[in-house]
Image (cartoon, rainbow, N blue to C red; front, side, top):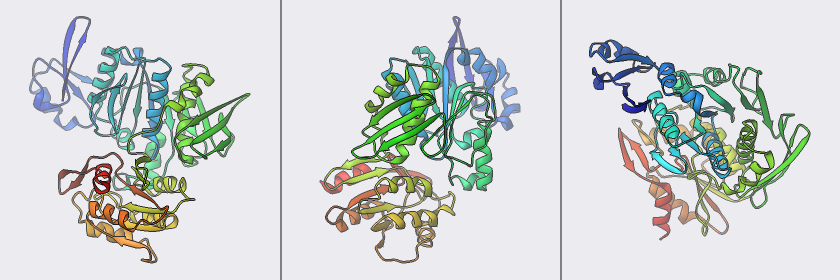
Length: 431
């Protein structure tokens, strides 16, 4: 890609593509395009820049506070909650993540990678600066950390949500995955760590913690999950409380991380922060109620731990779960997902998710290998028909929970992105 920026009445064109490189552009050298460096040089660019030089040129690190959130689950909700809180406190703020990029409540880029290539991030930060933003909240993926897609960025605050099995198709082992996540926290930056997550390693300098179970800087003293969330938190010698229309124990963690992070940045008094929390209703595709009667909920959960958190929040209900597993990804989590779903659900409908280059039947076979019985289990490869079956077999007060895709609007099949939205399918079937 190529971006155009203006600095002190001078215009700079910066590209990270050797194909787009010419004498009028600067070439941004990154970890991803290193092998094309000689090709770029042959086209005589104005100069070769690294990410740090480019970021310094735009004075990004001087002018905007960057908040980075990483973890297996909860990144999007925690980041979106911080973005919402800062806006409600009257701050100008940008937000980049799985859902795209937003600046001061306006969407400026569509959904892409959780953490895009560094030049895209630089462009988003530049647009945020142009719009007067003081803060920029971003999700940070393990892929981005290892591939150095965040090089040159100085974070005002780093937050860890949790770590559980994911992306082992890329990282190989859970130990490698943990090591990559941990490397994000090995500097002296201000950081906020989930104390109940015992797998992470981190530099304790400038570190604060939050917890429901263990002693921490921000420790939940009491909570209720009836009709939403109500929480009292002990912070050293202070006690504060907040409430939210959201549901689930996992969302206490997400909201506590968001509140604690904003407090650490000294944006406003803690009680002012808490007062605006209930304005945040959550993120599309995360515990999103698609229909009230029958009650149908869609969620993005696609790991064993993510599914457990969502299902545990509904453990007192009779649940029908519709789910599959993505192709060309970690196969070892498929039977684990089945066991988690079977432990909580009254009925399971196992289907296709994003099979990518794999055959859906083979993915489903991997899922079924985690089940000891076929009692209450239905298999329907076609995802729309699977959702229809769930609606047909629903009885009395049963809740239908459709997992894996959340607010995705397509299915990836054999290299094609075919339009498909769980929420639209439900509404169509119900109408």
